[in-house]
Image 1: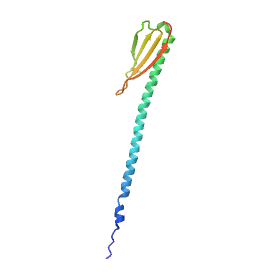
Image 2: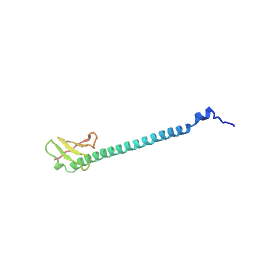
Image 3: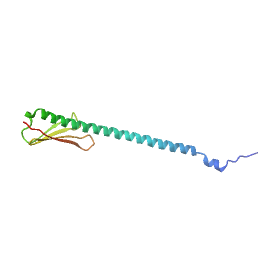
Image 4: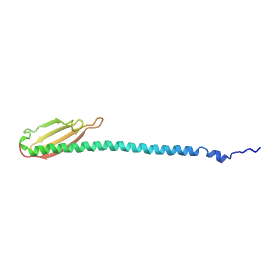
Length: 127
């Protein structure tokens, strides 16, 4: 009878391939999770950018309306506030007059976020 004895080197190598495969799967999974996190951040930043662009458009549109019809400008130096929630989440537009200087501020707040503001100023003579 001839008995085979496995060498100590061969028995020490058993299971190494499995460990290497598990480490490779772990590294790959972390990469996939990082890509998913980047995509989520990109979607949030895209929405924020859209709201900022919309706020700028709304403010410039309101100033354009005041320029095009200066006879209907508010006479007293007060603040006019109106809701624009249908355009921006929690949106409010306020117009303040100081002489011929008009300040238009658009404010909005996304759920769970801090409040954002866009302000622009124009000089309009008339009214």
